[in-house]
Length: 116
Ligand SMILES: [Zn+2]
Image 1 (cartoon, rainbow, N blue to C red):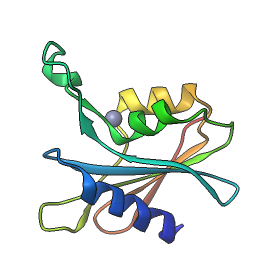
Image 2 (cartoon, helix red, strand yellow):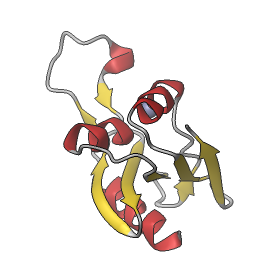
Image 3 (spheres, protein in one colour):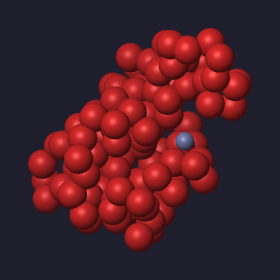
């Protein structure tokens, strides 16, 4: 599981958002997609939805097969892993796309969340 989280951390490092988050979607040992969070290019969107979360960005890129696992990592400014538990909006979206589980950095280790 760690190689995927390391990949998610690398994705997070590409983010230009204040909170840098990366996500990697995996099924059966195969990487299906990866993304970091990014700003939307529309100024009219209210501030709460001003970024695509990394999880959403991955889902937008890929048709998700049932039972996939998403790895989510967040980087602090200092470059250390921080809590990356998917927010309720992403949890709903991931479950709706059939993603089975999220594994995420916690700052002290790895967390697991069953989604569907
Ligand atoms: Zn989210």
